[in-house]
Length: 132
Image 1 (spheres, rainbow, N blue to C red):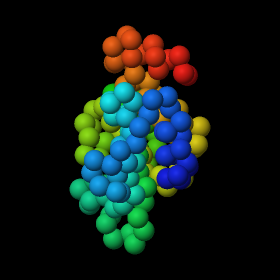
Image 2: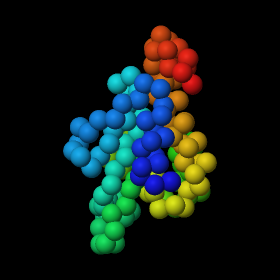
Image 3: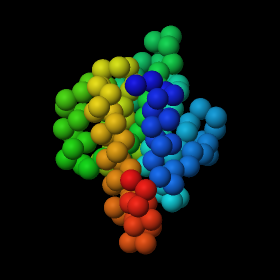
């Protein structure tokens, strides 16, 4: 999936809004004011497992994840790394280089959304679940 496909899929989630609190290059996706994803076009620093000298900007998405699943995904896909500028326990960064199958990308985005919704008050959860 590419940057636009990821953006469209995230925005298809009920009550999702996109904002740019970190500037034009970083989209933040929230459901009922709770962040569940970021989408960035740009280079990662050398300290974060990505060379800054590749000559190509890459897209990457941060997704919330269950800690045990986060580790499993990192061990399965080389393009999944601990969350860039996020909690390394609860967030993964996925470099959108085409190595993660589309179905798996959708599943990870769904899980991120559902994890955030599951921690909301019951009234907010119910209003969102009516639209799924």
